[in-house]
Length: 163
Image 1: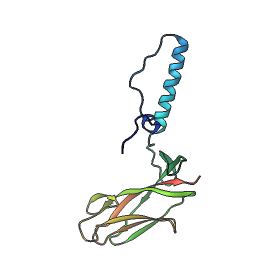
Image 2: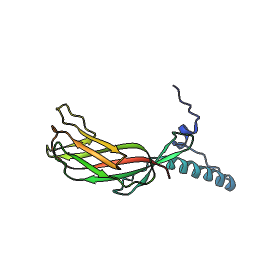
Image 3: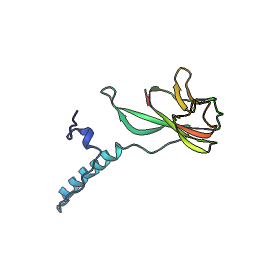
């Protein structure tokens, strides 16, 4: 599969690296207006680096599952200790949920070490898993029986909204 470099999807994120500004005032005004639009378009397609706890924020990411552009929202959930072999259910309070985009995080264990979620281990039952239980509106974190205790962690939940 080849990409089309002239596609708007491939052009909007990049700014021209050089631009000649004319000396005549009217032409300068036109060129500055074009420059402003180019900058605004490039800035507006970036991923927004906001990760708020317990409240949603726009991610800046656009999805095109249909012909309609949809944006995702992001929310962070902090949690405390989870014993080896136990499961933690974190209720999520999201209205207008349409589709899961990403669910990831990290934990600190009493090994001591830090692990990403999900974490796959070569030790039997040493995994730390995460899933989204949409029927009960819960994020479920399971710590394997071969894993060290979790001391604390966070989950980042990104989703498409119906609204």
